[in-house]
Image 1 (cartoon, one colour):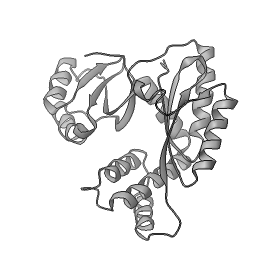
Image 2 (tube, rainbow, N blue to C red):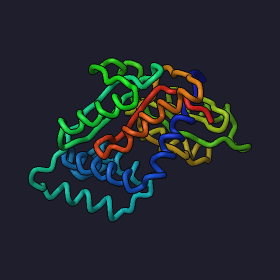
Image 3 (cartoon, rainbow, N blue to C red):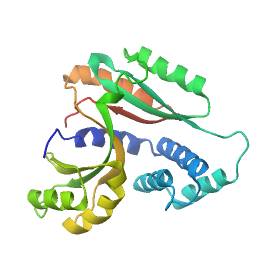
Amino acid sequence: MAGHSKWSNIKHRKGRQDAKKGKIFTKLSKEIFQAVRDGGSDPTTNTNLRLAIEKAKQENMPNDNIERTMNKALGNIEGVTYEEIIYEGYAPHGVAVYVQALTDNKNRTAAEVRLAFNKNNGNLGESGCVAFMFARKGCLVFEKDRELDEEIVLLEAIEAGAEDVKTGTDAFEVITAPEDFEHVKQLLPNAIDSKPIFAEVTMLPSTTTTVNDEQAADIIQLIETLEDNDDVQNVYHNLEITD
């Protein structure tokens, strides 16, 4: 077991998403749409589509919405296409920010993301300026309880193919390589008799930056401004958020 728990950061991001279900449904629909366009409508062969559908279901997106979006993508609507763009920079107080956007208008999105950084005392940087601080990983989070033994979680996770297990105050985080995520997600819950409260392929920071409460408020303001943009799919950062 190594590293620092990221569950507080994930809880904050999910809390923001839960507060704005309509907006997150719009973002998820866009992700599903583009996954179908890029790789077809079969989740068994289209990994990006499978992950997008699973994410949508975790957010309780109705099946009708998912099917409607897939059918719309299969209809080859003229002129509708999205491009993934990564923006990197720094929030106030030196916190790294990694932004994933899916847009049909690069110029509009670039201008809006730049404005968000500028208005919130951040700095939009060049490509690669913070990417090295993040790694794409599978992450499954299991809530701690009396019946879930730490040693058993570790042993079963490694047996299932996980890379690491991190222990927080209220949860276990199981970290996997992206390509092993599905396998671990299928095996581990049965092995430890516990369902994950979070399961997603995400971007995890290798190191975190700790600031005081006042500074954290400045950083969160930038993060929330970016998340409110319809073209922004995910905002990852290395701020250490505490309860």
